[in-house]
Image 1: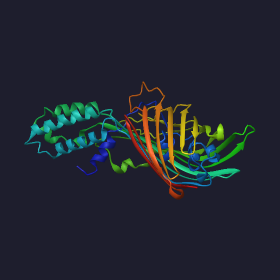
Image 2: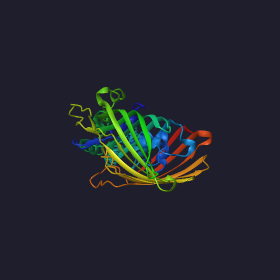
Image 3: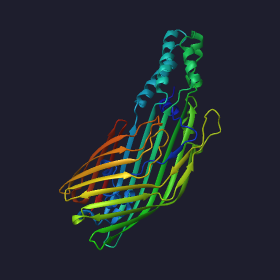
Image 4: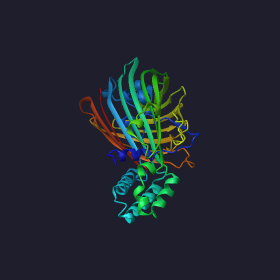
Length: 422
């Protein structure tokens, strides 16, 4: 059995999704600061992150040491949800297949029968277990001024879901091997005979844009910031379905499994600073004002049972409020629209709170929590409920290093970002 067998098996026992599913895009990109503060940013984003959170914040009043220039180079975050220790199960399945194939089944039929029974149990337990992975990458530069502020940003977000599907014929085949004679066991070839299918579904959104913002002084002494981010967007989908025996690395890379679509879109944002010394700030952003959608590839091979799925990028509205002081930032925000889940991921509509405590501008301690308000009673995939976040920031002499972490009943995640601000 080849050294690539584990990789092929982990993909082969893949994702099974209802044929009428509409697949939403991955979650919006978050800076590492936002990641550590419960995903918040609409009312607190620094200039460099404004284009990816709320373009109006590009012109907002921040600390004097971060109002003139901002740079993110780069920002990376990742989350993984594996409730049933699916990767460990794949390792165990791999070991059992190897043991069966390496046995001298003609002279040791009892051990081969036991291996077939163990494999049957493992595959049954693995059926419908799910792994979901989210990865984000961002780069940005911001140049705020007293008149107009401008920023440039690019980000890429990927979400992939893998789910097991144990074929009923394999169940019967392995059950028969548990009681088979030596000749039948010796003739068995799991690479050829196993028919368990797998489907891997992935979606990605890549953006590149420019943000413009301006601050307006109002008659009541407060200020209003308005921002817009025209951007170029590329949608990508990937679908691959195959039997365990048929998975090949070369096939996995074929362009026939992938679709792409590109177009222009726009985000709009506003922020309102008010209160004593304008320490309060309210923000709202509308992302992806122009709906976009992309159909996935679908094989006509009846053994793959592939259907055409639709990736949707719909407008998302988020509002937030924040209070800032010399040494603290407290914020809360809520999604006013729901994002439909991708594959076996949950629908999401986040209510989040976050905090940042500053130690004389050189270090920051951050924490946050967010709760999913969307109902997922009919969803049998990985749950998105309450997530807790934390992180630190180091910013000596204008350089920045931000680190964040996330944990929930299902997810673990981390983020890291390098940059500068002055």
